[in-house]
Image (tube, rainbow, N blue to C red; front, side):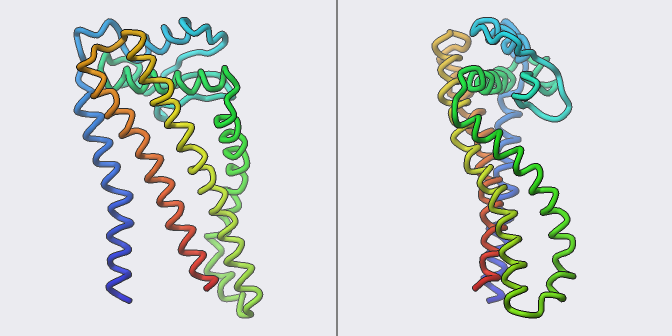
Length: 228
């Protein structure tokens, strides 16, 4: 049993650490400024927004990471993405504009994710309080019924966040490979030799969501085991 526990810890560590290292390496490898590029990630985002007539959508710099904010209708880019003419910056900017296109077209996947994110925002607050109090509640819950209620509550709170991760995966995949990559290819924004690099950047970015989903499933499995 001890050996199985060690193996499980190693696997969990690999799920968390290895994707982060791979993503960082991929982003750095393609993050070198390219003097042959006509503009930065921020300039490409502004161009694509104008090209696709996404009226009301803006572009801003942020210190909170690259993302699209559907509520504010803003493509928010990190300083590196916004101000650097690199393959990484261009690919990420196109990806975030891909989310703006999903929003503009009213695609169901993004709508569902946003609904679940709002719900998860509330449940995460309760989850934080619940897991802080869990040791005390475990002492109080001495009867089987109380213990089952405690475990079921933990499972329910974690399941919502896992559901958000699982719904996010196809939305992110579409923004990268259904929107960004075809835009970069068909619009002639990248030469054929750079498309493989852009695909690697988008794949690495998508894998961070896969890792988050796997970690959520691991946490959920721990609580499910409590019911066995």
